[in-house]
Image (tube, rainbow over all chains, first blue to last red):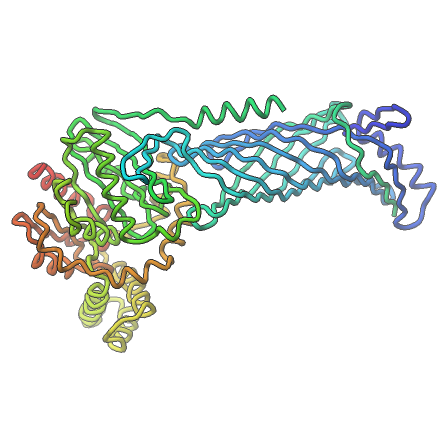
Length: 223
Length: 345
């Protein structure tokens, strides 16, 4: 993760740097549950590309991550970065004989990154879906068959899931992270009932040092 | 933003499908029939050059024609004919939105009529279509054949372990469970299981409400497993063997099955009675039953044989089958279907 301090125009290329920076501060302040706000800092957006799969049916997902809150929590020698992101994403999968599904979601991403770079995520999200049924469609609703191309349905969609990953900025000094996610997609009303689909995702997240910066609430929390 | 728009356009284009109509052997065409809130999958496999089509009307309600598409049927029927695996609305790979209001027997009958019309549109007005209804598909196909003008569109009717009258079905199931149960207890076979069934049947002579009907149906499913000659029909095995090969949408199929099997229209099905119209059915008809089918007992066949007006009506019984002879006695099943279709195409 890269954090841009707008006041000093200094760039911290990786999260470990910021964590190390917060260490002496936390030791200095001491005590339990001390908070300090660095609200003036700006953090760039992040972007990811993932290959998704439900069993064997392929798909892709592209996502952006806008930072909302970043809390650096230290407890003795342990440091944990807890961050919250709003993540719009566009995804697609193909299930031959059923449909192609294109869905747009906005997720609330809760990420915990350890000092080692290993992180875990949990992300509920809401969105919309447009399916394209897997074959030419004869619409006979009007009495006579009319050929429809790109026939399908729109559905509200909810998604929940999480995963693990490794933040390459920690040890490799590279602005990338690798991740594995598992999501459960639900669409309703699909044939008047709930459509369920587990989706696995393997991907790469890019964490540029600049561009598309947001001003999240940044805090340190010392124990 | 541009990559998003580009991806969106690309995927919309990928979602477009050309009308693929294949005439030949080893064909596999998928199309969808969209009607009143549902897009229903039709998979046509096999020999479309034969111009002879077997249209599968699956059971449930809410099962799927995916289950019919076995390796055996592929090699023993699709070589000679084309087989149409149709998923009814709210079943299998069929899709839609909030469409429960259209989940009715008259609507499904109209879907079947439209499917026949679309098959003729795709493969020619001169094709021969045989409608094969299994289980609930028996009721749906009875609704189709007793409706004026429909039988003229097809060449024949194959009725496989189906029910054409649900109230009669309950009586037949109860009577068969009772008589077979007593006989099996006397033979010393599965005494504890049969005794429970016999006790229940003796306590419920009829009339049957939904609760009793469901319990009888549950006993009927169990009963055929007490005969060693009846092969156990494992859905899990079918999924293992065919799910990936044929891209079964397992979860939607399960969800559809659960929904349709408990949908409000199931109560209306109990009132459906097409017996008065059977005398008008004049197309060649083949009635197929498993000797050990307690779910839709062979007694249905006796009633149909007495009522159907066709001069070409046949009833055959597999001695080693329960409710699904297409799997439990597949060689017999394919041979009988093949013989019937060859004779009347």
